[in-house]
Length: 112
Length: 111
Image 1 (cartoon, helix red, strand yellow):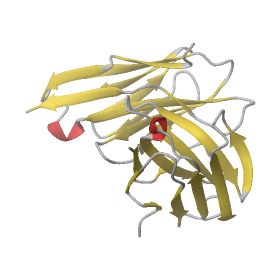
Image 2: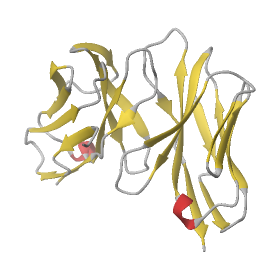
Image 3: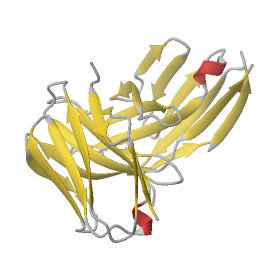
């Protein structure tokens, strides 16, 4: 009965590869987010989707492309991975009319 | 300039030793201020939302308060299981639904 789930939990890959991270929420929320948490634990928003529509797109390299096939899923595809992409990526969701965000367990991406 | 500043960066307490964490913010209009708890290897867990100055929320040993410039998370008689990183975030009026997070306070409570 996990509320926000992400796969995979760990991802180790080499520079230049392309990888995807998947997120699913079973809370019925309308808005989903991707955050990046760096080595200093600073959590910064990357993207937000509301009912499959992109509403927030922070200053993120265009190697990162989110996709929302439906309002319960938000995936993150990363092209041409770089060392600096190593971080923990969190998915979150929030119900309509609220700012209270509920986070997934995170995906630790390591680029070697 | 950081919109959300948390202090201290790290705090060590003995079990039962009460203290407070600070979150100061600079936004043109506050829509809400949020406190989260994050355990190692896990995602942030929502604790409280505060909307206006003077508001207070409580949960077990935690109490969050809000003024026009800052919020405090008071921890009364903490236990070792309260050890975690506590994150503060703000949502700005008139903006998108994004939260801007502070860098967190890592709390360690020793038995």
